[in-house]
Image 1 (cartoon, rainbow, N blue to C red):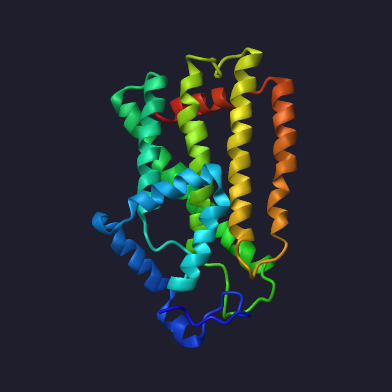
Image 2: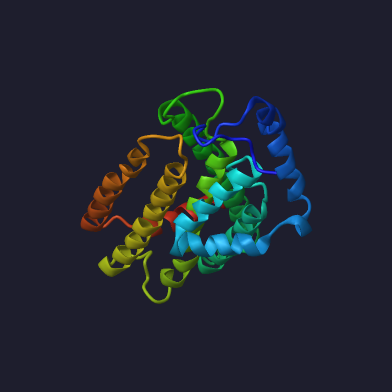
Length: 257
């Protein structure tokens, strides 16, 4: 059964639908499916991960379809989160091997990365963007429609995945082998900082696409403004010899001491 939204409601639900699709009900459904792997569509999650690199607009087009068929913007299937967590665990173990960490140190690093860097920072960024978008970006502020917190979290996960692959996976092959990017020489920090530029740029762009896809938001172009600061920091880092990858390696080792 299709949702009872009108063409001019900007995604708003009627009062009867709103009662049946509360945040608590959606959260319960999502967490319940998290315990049932057979109900998760991992093939579709992998499809989304592929298109986040090649055509992220197609991923957000699917969010539109979900709104039309299931009355919600946010994912109701935690398969993407599960696959992302597996990627994070594997890449963190890879970092432990590259940095010559022991088993206990690698385990500590894994716990830090999963529960602080991914979950903790993700919850903070999602909540911050949820507040900002609902307070400043709504075209017509109304209690009938707003940005779902779950959707803000999904946007963060979408943007975090390419960053994870670039900085936590591809970068591993350059740290001690092809180009030693955690060293003091120019080629090293130029390649490393360029990978950081691409990764954070991806994060900003996919975040912009996520909020720009919502028809009831305005002025979402402001989410692209940090690109100017990102470009400035990149130029300064290359000019002054700042090495972000070296700092990350040092920080990871410091964490597990």
